[in-house]
Amino acid sequence: MSDAQAALKRRPSDKEGDERHEAIYRAVSDAIVEQRLKPGARLREDALAEVFGISRTGIRKILQRLALEQLVTLTPRRGASVTRPTADEAKDVFDARQLIECGLMPDVARRMNAAAAAELREMARQERQALRSGQQSVAIRLSADFHVRLAQLSGNATLAEFVERLCSRSSLILAVYGHRGHLGCESHDHDDLIGYLETGNGERAKAFMSRHLKAIEASLSMVEEEENVPDLQQIFGV
Amino acid sequence: MSDAQAALKRRPSDKEGDERHEAIYRAVSDAIVEQRLKPGARLREDALAEVFGISRTGIRKILQRLALEQLVTLTPRRGASVTRPTADEAKDVFDARQLIECGLMPDVARRMNAAAAAELREMARQERQALRSGQQSVAIRLSADFHVRLAQLSGNATLAEFVERLCSRSSLILAVYGHRGHLGCESHDHDDLIGYLETGNGERAKAFMSRHLKAIEASLSMVEEEENVPDLQQIFGV
DNA sequence: ATGCTATTTATTGTATACAGCATTTCCCTT
DNA sequence: AAGGGAAATGCTGTATACAATAAATAGCAT
View 1 (cartoon, chains in turn yellow, brown, green, purple):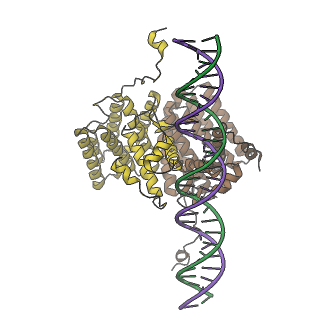
View 2: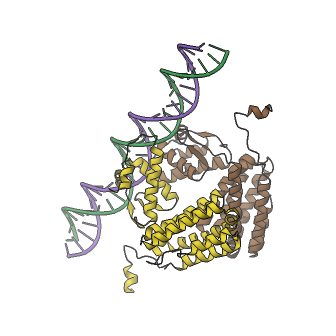
View 3: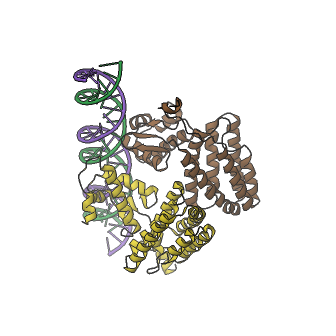
């Protein structure tokens, strides 16, 4: 058991229960986003309950939340599994990101200031560092965090929450359809974007974000994964 | 007990459990959207469990879903209550609708066809009828349904789901800040919009939707409701 | 009479036990 | 040997019982 999991396994004092649930939620969510739990992986309630030292009741609550965020799929009597996004869903998600994230850029540029820019640059730095040290899955999550933080800076909490969900799902999509070695955001894209935002050039930032997202989507290989049970008729051309 | 509630109260045969939960969810959701449950109203688990004839377990599941959709607020040891949107939240929701719904209009126009147009006209008709017969709360819900159906016609399920949540919250906002007698969508706005979409004029539809949403937002009186405990210092000018 | 404290009550949070379906496995039949 | 059916097992769905906490009330002291 990892240290993180051991740290989560303290006593059930109910006052800390909420924080604890939140921590477990984030642990599972991060594991999915970082592809330590791969699409299709089954998430049995008993197993999770034992790992985190709480009862199935709490686990179910967390799984339902993840299901509403479409990170896990809940099939009626089969339980939970990590969502395997379809190509159609991937298109919807990136179209949605085009509309929302690009639309937010002018607002973000208007509200940008030195502190926010410094914070974003630090996030971009961590992301590059993770990439250099070969931690691909961590880099994917940091990249998603960057996009979310950007949306939060727009001042619209509702749209920021939407972006958060889109970025989580994007990580799943990258996990399934992304090429190894060419993961999503280019190294310096985020830094360039910060530059445009710092100078208040909202329209330029918007156009750049559009190209940025298009580049990510274009880097995907949208071939559907083989099913566990292959279609023999198709394979043998009957 | 109403017929609808009685119909929900059959036996717990587990195969029908999912449909049943969905029906209860919609019953509560509709009651909130139609303002039969007003903002601030407490939703005690025992009471709901008794009304719908299921145990608290199922009720909690539904309340958590409603909480994630921000229709109910879940305060840690106080339970659930119907969300009372703040003025800031209202602004966020309408800004989000501007961005998303307007952005979808070109896509909707592109995919519009006779069958879809007929369906939309029927929905608009029902809405007018509800208005004429004085069923304001029903009209509010039908209006939300119209906007949601429109978003679904864009073909992007993800964005349509976002619009669904925004429209639900808008109904709550209208319930709190809307004037009596001037509720949201003007009678013929929706019909006009269908006209633009039918002729494939996406840009025109987009501009019209923008004015439409601005008009709704402008019709609100964004004064915060008085708290139960009034500020005596302010009242007596100390 | 008012303010503070303690007890009681009402309500949520959690775990556990039980019931029900789905899948799997094993055996029997052809 | 292969296919189908029946029993068994594994897992989820639901309810209920219990624990913990916040609100309400009553009692006491000042």
